[in-house]
Amino acid sequence: QVQLVESGGGLVQAGGSLRLSCTASGRSFNRYQMGWFRQAPGKEREFVAAISWSGTMTRYADSVKGRFTISRDNAKNMLYMQMNSLKPEDTAVYYCTADPNVVPTTTLSDIDYWGQGTQVTVSP
Image (cartoon, rainbow, N blue to C red; front, side, top):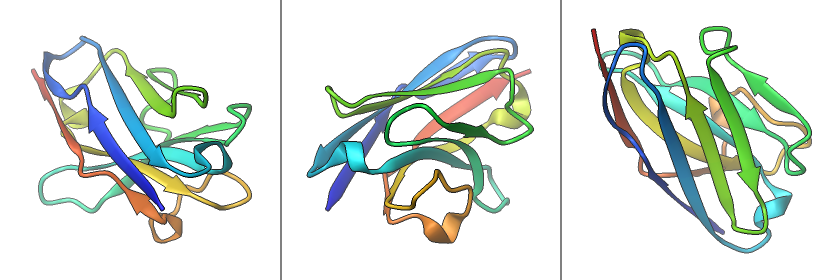
């Protein structure tokens, strides 16, 4: 069992930056692939970024490549996402995820654990 709690969301102007954090508790954090999904109002939840248990493999949605960076600190049971050059279309609730797959997944149905979400709002 893994519990996930996100923090770091907020209101920022377009072009600004935010850093999301996810605190994980429970056993064997470093055995899980971790990731971020997001859901904007009226839209389906979508993949944003994922990282392997070792941190050596990362995956990004095309819409955030070059702007967002996912990272993890297994010693602290922490997951991060640095978000730069934010756009109004990045406005959404961001969810931290964990899954036991062999490689980091981009598929919503593969996710075993979800955080409660943190709101990110980017103003024009």
